[in-house]
Image 1 (cartoon, rainbow, N blue to C red):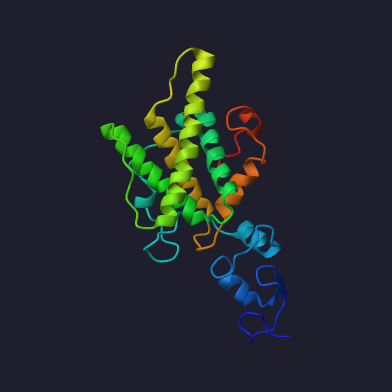
Image 2: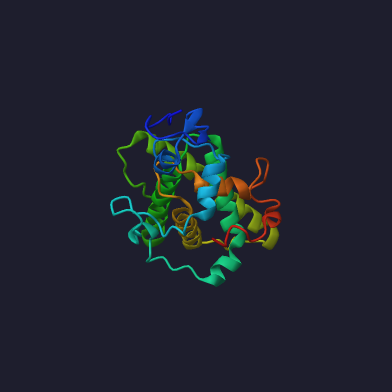
Length: 229
């Protein structure tokens, strides 16, 4: 029997994306490119397990080349910040996971694009105290950015309310939210395969937070797994 994709080479493995058997070459070449691979596909999981660390694939650069601009290198993130604001990072991660879980069609590139837009907005807020939404001609992406921004703002508000209840005032600064978002953006760029249909980063977020996990309460249960790429 021949491969269900190329119809030339011999089929050797079952592909749940096409509900048929394909050859290893097509699996490797088309995985998360033309194939919308389910997250539990054993060949996808195997590929992720053996994948080399991804230093952020550039949208417009050659394959595998890091895009330093996309990682906002001007934003410095210290180990002390990661330690002191671990709960903030976990809360924002939960907000991202909640958004991705609400729209299962989201790919890593959608989530990362929305996070990049949020980072630019917070940069403007921190530097000029202005609220700015980076323009985009992509209406679908615009909706994704809006939904994720809503979840993030809700989490930030709840975080500040929790601080108010526990210590009597709010210490969280917009600059800290910016740093936390940049950290998560870099984490996402490092986790994703860079392929168009990759969900490696979203699956990573889902693994950190079960469906009924709370954004603020019970964050201690997640430990420090998220802040270690």
